Image (cartoon, rainbow, N blue to C red; front, side):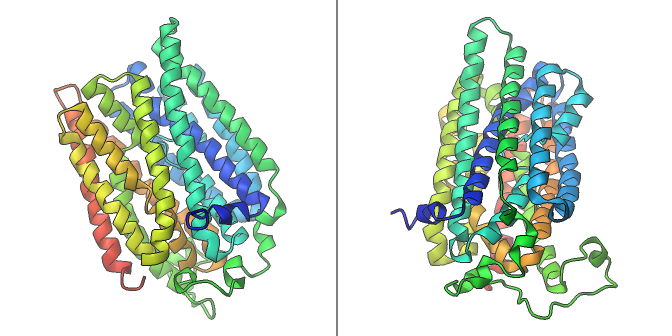
Length: 445
């Protein structure tokens, strides 16, 4: 069983890869904290659904700018240095959320400290880490190692949401106000930033671009399957110096830009749908409609994240047998249908069941998608392209929380019907993404 789920591949990797996986676990633990209580803390401070949605939108837009800048300069300044700096900003933002009640101060802290409204891995960290791993791991093992990288992140998020929910209930039972309990959780968030900083500064120079020596592990491995080879051949890339895209992305060859335009358009639909139904809005929806306590909510989303982590492992043997694109669509379609139906279920049992069914498949496409992207482009373009794709995904997701907040604010029945409509719309957009993905890349895959 171990070889089929890729654990041996992870064990055999360099210590730097294990440190990067551990960093993701710590970071996603912190993001699990923020995803459970962010919308609830803002509501406790007296902000309306519209302002909560605007907060999330501004956070994600700021993240777009931050990711663009960081991924563009990371290879020159040093990948490990950029991750370490981001870890310190993350720790600082947790402190600000623990002591401040000013809307705009919190917005600034959320942007520069990378507070995740969804519990997902936003910010420049992910792109830089994946770029590091693409040169540290052979192409034959890359999909399996990525799956474990995402699995550990899902475990971190699961632990974060469950621990936060029950710790808040304990604090409230001891007489601490709900707002103070939320702020205490952001102290833990800050501590996770410090831990991540320590893990960043011990990374070796093998993680930096100059260590690649013109060749990647993927190119040195003679046993790579066809699907693990770059879709774009390395010899003689053509560059159009007169095209405006060239000036924005000066290191991308013409073939890479054509691929990237198509891929980014398709992925933007999925990202906008995800933004409409972020974990912060889902927890807010369950809290409003079913009057659930945070301990119960934390347990539900703990189970949700554990199921999501299992889907990462299942995706490995499936991708090896049916291909990357087919695996992405196979898992994503049932998850999208479950999200589409979730708001219409009248009982908490039905809604939770739908949420858990979605969780089984929601991460099914994650590792195959990144493996597909990593091998569709030239090695020297990976940091920029992966960062650029993350920027497109975040930008597409940015305005969606505001749409959800506006729909919730206009609802006369407490907000949950409007938020439910946005969640269902998100499921529909994700179905459209799957259809386009299969039609565009299915034959090539």
